[in-house]
Image 1 (tube, rainbow, N blue to C red):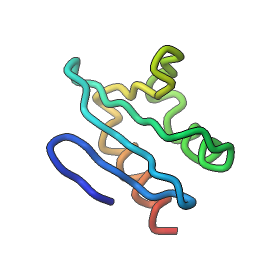
Image 2: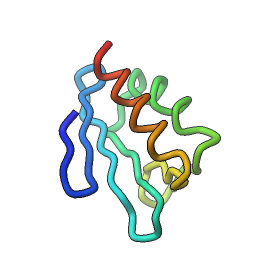
Image 3: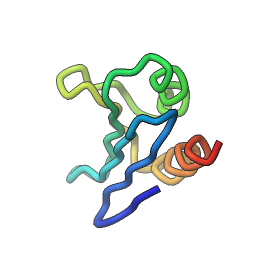
Image 4: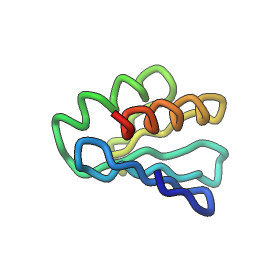
Length: 78
């Protein structure tokens, strides 16, 4: 995991997954389209935020930020 200035990057199944703080205290999670990555990232995000179809990313509610980052980090280490 690379981290800096409210931004994180995870390498999951060879694909970069980006997380970044949003100005409204939530966090965005995004990756380029990859079905295998989507199938492992979506369950982490679902129920902890909502999908934003305009930006094609997950918006994670502030209270779930740490657990989502921990779970993405665990996926990266697998």
